[in-house]
Image (tube, rainbow, N blue to C red; front, side, top):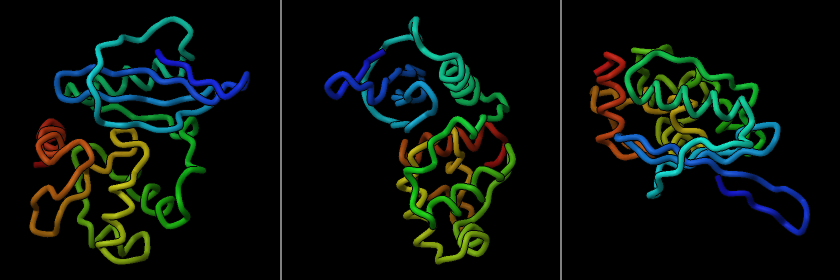
Length: 163
């Protein structure tokens, strides 16, 4: 776990998730999850001093990556970092059930905007896996892009039985 300070004020902490499919960094403060990054090389495990809600989130991420159906508590996710349009997009995406998909066009229609703008909002999703942007695919059924790479998206969709 890394702790980031600005002067004497705690800004955020990070914990690493080292999984065979992806390495992730989860940033958090004492109250909320601030972001998830699906890149980086690390092998740290959950350590002492990590709030219980963060520990639970990391364990749920591991379970999802292993192919289990899980639900995340979005009340602990700091959505204030999102633009109003991105927030609409992410709210729609968070409602896509396990094992289901939605096209970029369907997402754009539900959130307002174009398929391209919906895709751009997902490309900047600060909470991949927690907010399941991997469940949004192209209208032709192909996966489309993903922060963690197209292959990871394909694997996640297969594990959910959606591809």
